[in-house]
Length: 58
Image 1 (spheres, rainbow, N blue to C red):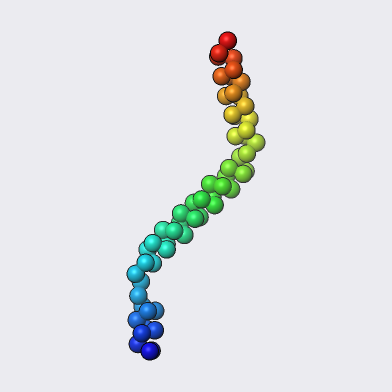
Image 2 (image 1 turned 45 degrees about the horizontal axis):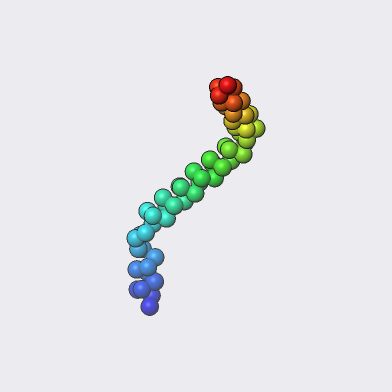
């Protein structure tokens, strides 16, 4: 039993996938935080784009 536990403890199979998953999660959190911080600027930008498109159709 002890040998099985030691073998399991040393096994690194799947560790890379977990690391990539953690990195992807951190990137997602950073993107969401940036979007929340820049929300007002993004809304204003899309408002200006919408106004410009409304004026272009006439």
